Image (cartoon, rainbow, N blue to C red; front, side, top):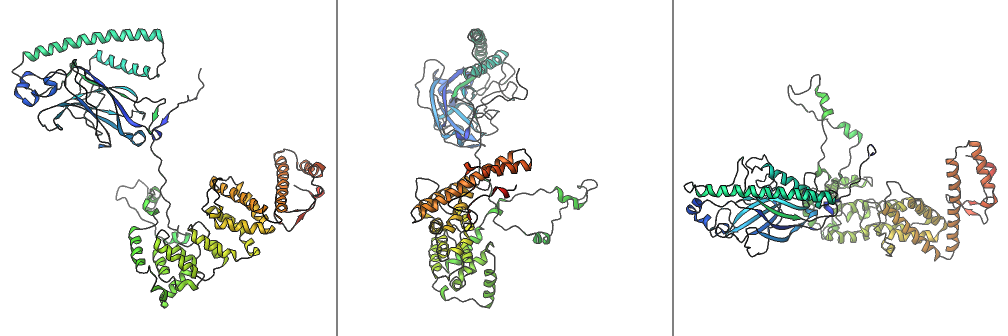
Length: 635
């Protein structure tokens, strides 16, 4: 008895992972074509000279094309020439590879298969003296969005070109009650059902039972012989009626009625077989960009007028006022809001800056009183403020005048289009002329908004002039800025030299014990941070910097002693963390937990009674730890 609620495992592959091209094997045609009436051949010479009407073995060929959404996705692929056979049955047995892969086709893809016959005249549907012998359209995905596999029988719609549109008129599978479609007799429906089961048996979807399979095969063979005899009898009756009805003039008939059609033609094809079912899976696209516009503050949102929406008289629900309508309004995301640049504004900026590109006249350009006030307002903006295009153009225009103001460097860097090589070259020249900025301004230029290597190198050069005490005040922020450096996490690449900030911090931390102690533990905290905000790439960056720091530390005169101190600190923290976790998981009372801690500290095996030589405290290296007093231990 199966467990209630249990789901059997289902192994499948996604279509977006299948790089193989769409292929199909054209096997051959089964069935008989209805002969044209003699009166039609006499009255229409163009029909009289078609290959299938002049020879029992016409020279046919097949073209296949992929369609989706009523549009052709590929060019038609044609079978090679096959010499005509003496019997009526046409056989190709040829694989056709279409110029598109399975991962690139949508779920509504279908194969438009057209069989062509030779024709001396050029008709409406004829192509290069070839007239459609028949057409069929086979869907590549089934109703359950799985790729069709194995052998397929496709009904041939005589004298029709394959229709690859969504509302196709030449479906490969014909329903028993379709409008204008041939009606299948009871024996034909049974044979069709058995063939579908044989297909599943061949694909391994139905288990094999040898003795039962033999009985089914023999029964199917008897039904096939009976169907063939009945079909032959019906064809003989139709030929007799055709000979006795020479006076009747009709076009090439398509048998559509309630009686079974003995002249049904099918095209046998085969699609590639996969080890597992292949289910359609669309490509996952990146989410829409987040808006670059600043969010409104609470005061700004309150100041804005709320939109009033009225549905018109009689549309509101009973007892619902106009004020209640806003609760039913849906917010729609506009993807254009996330675009950082307006195309019109970007073009205006290029035209404006082209006149101030060489900087020959801008060097002596002085602002008037009004422009000076506008520049002072811009200089007073906080570091996180985003400049408008007009403000950025104004800063760029008076960039040489602003070189004397240390507050203007961050604003100037934000106004530069670093993707423009001309602006990039000129901005580098202006940076060298700028007055010396403060350390906090240099720290702001190491954030995520400034990814240009030249700007970050300039900020690091300013930090080199700061002493160790001043650098210690900003060390935590500088360690956080390492995640914005352009460094590879590959251990085989020595690319620490490509990061000026990492190289600078390693050199200064290795030369100063106080600075190096904090730098080391800041790195360790980042390496052990497995929160969702800290991704794997950032952890690898910090681990690489920590490794390079230890390598540089050994090169110093007192580097080995410094390194041993850091190792002893790590051992002490590991011991304290272990006892803290044990106490936390214990269900004892506070008094018993306190006794356990005192006993642990007093155990000589743990070497915590006396610490010799004294160990610098990780939180404050100026304080030395000499012992742990168990008497004053509290929880």
